[in-house]
Length: 291
Length: 163
Ligand SMILES: Cc1cc2nc3c(=O)[nH]c(=O)nc-3n(C[C@H](O)[C@H](O)[C@H](O)COP(=O)(O)OP(=O)(O)OC[C@H]3O[C@@H](n4cnc5c(N)ncnc54)[C@H](O)[C@@H]3O)c2cc1C
Ligand code: FES
Ligand code: FES
Image 1 (tube, each protein chain N blue to C red):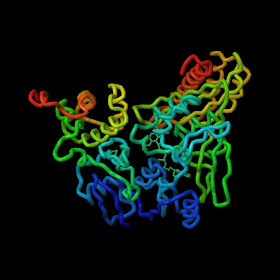
Image 2 (cartoon, chains in turn red, green; image 1 turned 60 degrees about the vertical axis):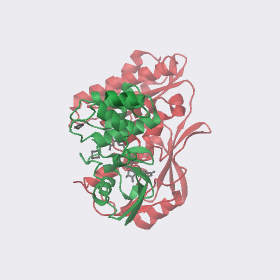
Image 3 (cartoon, rainbow over the protein chains, first blue to last red; image 1 turned 180 degrees about the vertical axis):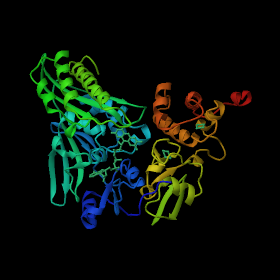
Image 4 (cartoon, chains in turn cyan, orange; image 1 turned 135 degrees about the vertical axis):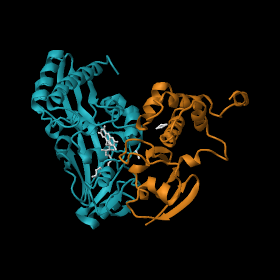
């Protein structure tokens, strides 16, 4: 029977309360959102916080809405709500693609976007989606809110810019014209973490690629990105040759490791193939040829 | 700590450690052993219960986190000895063999039907993809859920006779 180490449980009633509790209990305290990364780690004794601060009752963290020229997603929005969101499907179908293959419906009823970003597991699908889209992360402490660019948020595996007495409150994505996005993942069995996965975002200017973003999960890409591959796409015609060049750069520059999910060369192969497919589908969507 | 919640419509309370998981609270503190406990790693789904109407894996939620919430387990599904259509579907379509996965399957199926009263086969298979069954091959489970979708009021008298 897997049982966590002992700890004290506190329930925060609002954001300020959560921050005050974090400050009071110091660096041995952890927030718990869906608990679907933290509790399994605690059960395996890979994590042993002394105090858990439950933020499931905190209001104002469960919105998906347009705010100015951005889409804002509250930290406590569950995977299931992201999957069901018509607003996200309209602007960024990459979310729907990714959520369909994140875990299973029961896990998706609990796991949150804030927890996914803060967990920063190198195989986390939503982190790769965020990397592809860009945007920003809003982090709050007792001295106020600050906005961290998405691509600076993840400092490394399991490390983010969120400090000890801080809470991620919102993730924001710019709304842009003539864009398409898509996510492609290969897993060993339904509901499993990725062997490899790739998200792509494309903005077109006529037949040319005005801007592009690629996010990679589970293949050891620093910050989930390969900037050279994105640079290679900008200003190029939106055709297969351009996508192949970017996909090859991802293949060459990511650094997967051999593990129980597959050998290193297979994961590199997947990185190339999945980037190619994601770019192709994102472009078709930008042209309105696919939904 | 004192943990109080509504379970199957009744206020329940127990003094437990903060680290106690909801599945053990239900089984060991409240004696509701209908909720099964299998993999312990959030994979098999046999521990599925509804918390505030959402089907969740109770091995991956602290009892403390369910405090103040409304929990439904498989024991709460039949009302006054009358089987719920999902339970009846499992019986009629032979949706179980050993029965180990069944409580979780039933709770997930009820959550699905509350959201989507007429799901097609693909939707049902997707919905139960977090619930593993080692016996049936899923075919009859899908039929059981379809049966429930087609009989939201349970069996008619005519079917009662032929069954
Ligand atoms: C069986 C299973 C399969 C899974 N499969 C996949 C998969 O295929 N792909 C995938 O991407 N994920 C998968 N996951 C992980 C799932 O997506 C988790 O829900 C997610 O990683 C974490 O979200 P959470 O809300 O549960 O976070 P929690 O476990 O509650 O928290 C995770 C970490 O983030 C911190 N945290 C949480 N919220 C905040 C906040 N607002 N501010 C600051 N810190 C915060 C916590 O302190 C903790 O350190 C799977 C999980 C399980 C159990
Ligand atoms: S015991 Fe909870 S998912 Fe297996
Ligand atoms: S009936 Fe035996 S595991 Fe499903």
